[in-house]
Image (cartoon, one colour):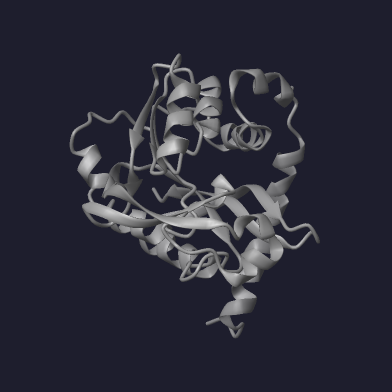
Length: 255
């Protein structure tokens, strides 16, 4: 048994997988050419890296779709894909629908994914990327003052299982989670769906940016318990002082 304490063990894992970050900077495509089609630079870069490890996808569950940046990038890279994009904030959902209206493979769905059915207390942030079912932490307010302005709203919520029971799903399947600390609740609501999900892509924090947010160590252990193994980091978020705050991490179901 290893004598390393858990903190050292997890950081060893990060350093071992850090070599995969070279994928992030070796893209040969002109990412800026996609901006006119609605995909953001960050989403396009993640897709550049994702396709290196996952060359084919037929179904994507896009939890936390925001204005459709990730979905639009996926539609460009995976010509056979169907994307179910979930966005709970009404104004942001309107933008999602407007941005994706000419792409029939993207299906916008108003509401959050979680572990319950009904209505969910939610915090609509003035900085829309930070809207969440969890309040922003004092640390995030300190590092990113633009996230300090938010207001409570109520949004519909359903488990992923509620939706997948209605669909005929074609594999390979990717679950993408950009849900600002609500990842565990999304996974709790996907117990019947997970056996068919081949890949999980999530934004994982190294320090809690939301109150009660599970950080990397907890999410990594949970995904391993659910039968997934870490493939590589595909993107990252730094503070203004270059402190590493989050990584976009790709997991694959074990054979």
